[in-house]
Length: 314
Length: 179
Image (tube, rainbow over all chains, first blue to last red; front, top):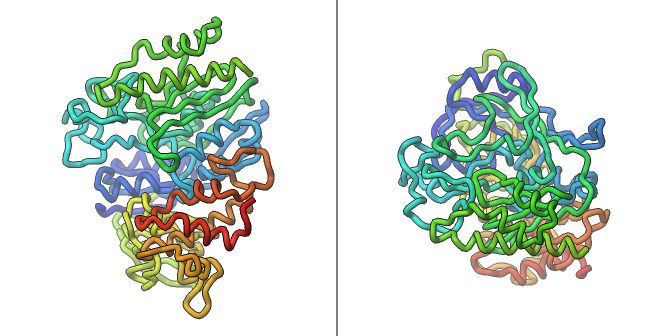
């Protein structure tokens, strides 16, 4: 791990300002992803701004009947909140499908949104990666492998987002509150937080440098069923090969793209009376595999169809 | 914090370990795990993967289990850490340590301190009603501690000797009969 300096933030706005003033600074919350990457020297911050003790861990009702989850709430705290469990069960299910209990006890909601891909080539500093070094090339294109994106990928990057939580948030039409280095408070719809890779895979979110996530806001729970399905190699403590979050009329897919993939085409097909299989076909019409991950297209088609058709029976 | 200090890479602070306040001085890069093992001589907590994948480094901080390898020591200034040495020592073992011996819940023993700290944290989580991915009724105030719940909740602790059935039995001995 490279040397760094450290400060403990006293306010969210102060942390954002400080981050903008120190190029090479990173926010430190739970640390479970950042410290892992720092040990591998994939993340090499020169300055850490510890935001873990900011008073942003509250989970509170909003005026319109929704819920505001502070960014420093742990994954465990968010998943265990009785209001989340009963009104937003898809969010609890997604959270407890991720990581291990030890990690969820430490990892925060804000950090979950900002975590980086688990692409094996991103983690292997001996191989070129456009995320680590723009223009270096993407090792995954030739390297094969099962986990890569089937939607929204580019020649520059085929990695996927590792977050389960963000998939549920997309289905729930959540938004993300931030504070910018200028002290401006912004609210960003969840589907606009993360970016597809395009030719700038090193830019992962639409947050500006130094902008700090302060909360996730859930609108009132939608009418209808909520469900999270995750398919993976082990029954527990493994990243997803495919996941799906349903919340009423909305659906989002995980482990298929570099961002939580809002399934708008499937939603539209479903609204027009299509079968689950037809809705899946509509969403996956543009899906492309690289060989080793071709199976994910079939997997996605079957899980989407099953989830929708079982719902129609109810 | 308008003019944060930017040229200091060491820190001195107080941390409570197994009930005892300790004054420590560390390179900022020091993980909680390395502080415990290398500076405080508490080598019961083990370094397995050092990347949060194996659970051998599990300790309790404020009663919650975490991976001490993925936490900087400085993040725990003023907090209370419990390691396996604080759970129980020879001559005064915790009931769960005794159960691990009785059930032969290890072979090499390397993962055992993490398994025991993790299990103690896990039982508190269940008591607080925190759900897992196998919890059927998310609205329930009381979560039945089935074998499936124990297995799922202990998935962050790897045992390469594969003593999982005995670990389950040991935890079951302490937690009570299957629900």
